[in-house]
Amino acid sequence: MVAELGMRIFGIRPGTGLVSTMRTLLLLLWFAARGSALYFHIGETEKKCFIEEIPDETMVIGNYRTQLYDKQREEYQPATPGLGMFVEVKDPEDKVILARQYGSEGRFTFTSHTPGEHQICLHSNSTKFSLFAGGMLRVHLDIQVGEHANDYAEIAAKDKLSELQLRVRQLVEQVEQIQKEQNYQRWREERFRQTSESTNQRVLWWSILQTLILVAIGVWQMRHLKSFFEAKKLV
Image (tube, rainbow, N blue to C red):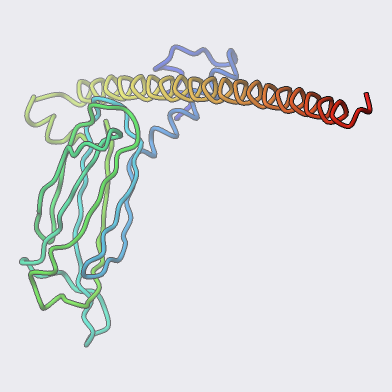
């Protein structure tokens, strides 16, 4: 089914272009895994950060909920409404594009304007609440990137789209997101090539400098030995 979808989107005929088909399938599978759900534990003053590689002009939605550890029951319970999370997002240039405090359960949204690694950090406002002081907090985090961040049920209801129209819109947005991912990979490749060329050039100049230093030391040693032998009247 995935192979047929990839062939329909990119116009690939079955039985032709095996390498191209495999690349398309790998790209589709990688694209389908752009959503990530996890949970982690943090202490009172602890801060957790995650790195997400995001193309430019891509919407990202994060949903989270917190649970507070109950020492008496020895299990995690839903956190009190007063306990909140502070979310901070930085772009690859270390500019803050989102810094906001939310409740114990919430949703944050931002749009990337620069391709590259974005840093998403979360920490609690536990210092304001002695109830949580010294305890542990479990945070469930679900990050959706690009087309996966869209709520198509809400879009269909708002724009009054039929099932076929909605499916076509999904495919169009998926193709647009794949193009963004391809552009991002090209940008990474170009940056890596520039870094490699710069490193090779530096290595070349360092080798030339080392050679000049060795030649200069050899000339100096020869002149020094010559003057020594002349002073001793051995030459």
